[in-house]
Length: 507
Image (cartoon, rainbow, N blue to C red; front, side):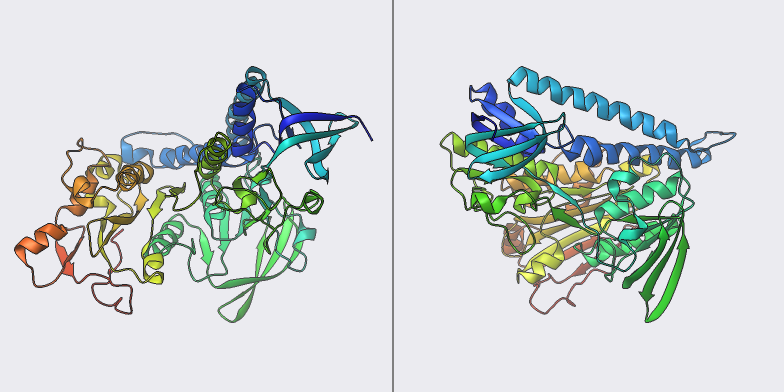
């Protein structure tokens, strides 16, 4: 065995939480090493969040260019140059990698490129990318292993060499006909972008709606968007077999509406969930337990079942967002310094970067009903936000859930232009435990997206107002595109969904 190098901290995997822990503790004077197999900085700056949003923005530019006459522009021709799209993305990625390498140099954290696995408790054996072996040990170990795209067990699927998001983000050609398996966030973002570059697109989703975890009105709005953009969507569809090879010719067999279908296409993209990168790491040698899904078992402080070993990010079962991994870093960092931060009751926002965006924070109606909560709902079309009129982007709606017994904001969803900025405003109010009336009565700049919150909430009365005016029943207001209002009873989530149920947004 090679000589064993000893560190104060070793991080396995350079994802968001892991790299920040390495930089922070090294800067504080702890001898720190980080072991990474391939991607400096982890998946976010290389093959996930940032590259995908870069590609998605190029697709949006292409979409806007096709609408040029709507904005008073005259274009003689328009064609997609995927090499140019990829060049812009790669320049961004290269710059981000340099930023990461500079952080390692400045912080003094040692970056070791190679495949690491436990060979004993707190001891990591490394097969170096440059050749050779190393063995290192540390007083503390942090596991930042991440996840990878899942490939369902379907006859012929693996043999067809389908793309995952990694290969899709490196495409230098426009697929003539792409079939996307999965109607979740990754599949929807990439499907719309590749369609806008000129591909024929088919999305196959096994559930009854797109974005299955969202409320039905969100799923319906996304379905309408995709159909308007010429994307074929098959819901309640089961993939049964695949023939051929992605990138050349594939035959995709699907059971849909009790009928067998065969889709002839050229390319196949799998976006059917994620699998933790916890196999082959020797976790059993370290005393680190995993659950049935392969996630590392952690407590609310992100401590594993092994002493002085933490797991952070996707592999720890945290919500699969970079900003959540960053918060995992803050939890471990502060607790190592004597703090008492936990993952309990985190208010986790998230966005899907389709065009328009979907942005959510807190509970949606489905979750509120599942918990048996009584709530009021305010909802209106995005077209009532005058900012969207200036952008010629009136599609979508915004919706807020307010606790029935108080004025506390339970959750917020927005599907429309600049939805993420709207959501951040509501999240700030929720973090400050402010009643919805603070947003209702605020003075926002005109014309901004945030101004729409005052329109959404204008006719929602506070509990104090209800006590003063003694109305016959608590009221909900849903604005329609024509400016009319429909009043209804509150939702209780206890078998009275028909009382005051929303009629769906006007898109």
